[in-house]
Length: 373
Image 1: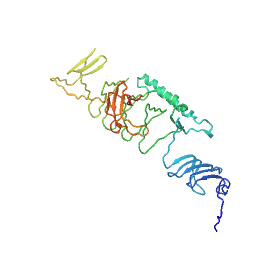
Image 2 (image 1 turned 90 degrees about the vertical axis):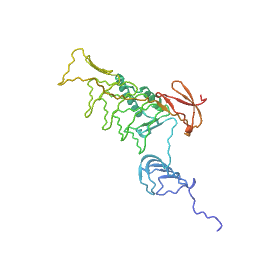
Image 3 (image 1 turned 180 degrees about the horizontal axis):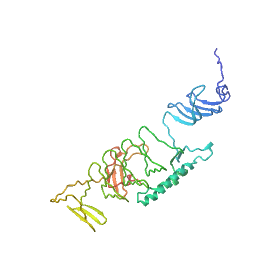
Image 4 (image 1 turned 45 degrees about the horizontal axis):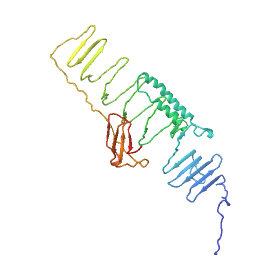
């Protein structure tokens, strides 16, 4: 009774698993913690599964995807699935290409992106075509050179660290919360047909320098079903021109035109000038007045309301944080380098912020640690 008794020989490199009807088509490597590598060769259901139970479940499934029901798992899909109940990250330091363009049986280069580059080239061609029309109309021009440089110097063959997404039948992004799109330089949007925006509440656009709208064929329409419509040039002139008629209507109210200095109406050499309390009419030919009653009274004036505007300067509060940790740099001496060459000494306060910097317009400025080269 004090001698050991060997009941069975467990599987190892010398004593492999017993072959039965359940496992004769598969190889499974499993640890006591259920870390698993399974390779199944059943004809028409070939698949590989690599999984761990840590953090819920993390898996890489390839081929014929099945669930965990035993002994006859149900089909979950085909292709590949990389999933986890925890966080996930995909990182490629030299660039990342994600594509739904077909490459049958891996019969091409890993970075085969001809279909994606063709789409970008077509977008560039469209921009060039509209560029010429906009230039003829003296509209603001798209930054075509930046678009060309992005395609040839960065995206083609991923010459630089970039992310390229491509799909022949469409790409969709959706979230129940917020979606942010940010770029340190340009955001380029090109569509071969229509670009539609539908917003339930407010649609706002703010530009530090200029907003330009150009339509080549069918014009521009701006409608407000309710509420006031205001168009103002708060710091300079406003021009309104048309090749044909200009119509101004007020269906249930008045049309009021006022100017602080003068109103001048000119057509065919004739004119009416209103200013300095006088009304002057002139014509190279006849002046005709038609009225059932024409009356003349003593002088009288009407007060006018002239819109007053305050200069809306651009202001920014620079903030200094540590890279990667995103923690503020408090009480740090800095140098604020303006676009015009001016240098101002600053010191950060609470949360790494500096005092408010006011500018007349939008400028590209740099904030440097003091004594930094």
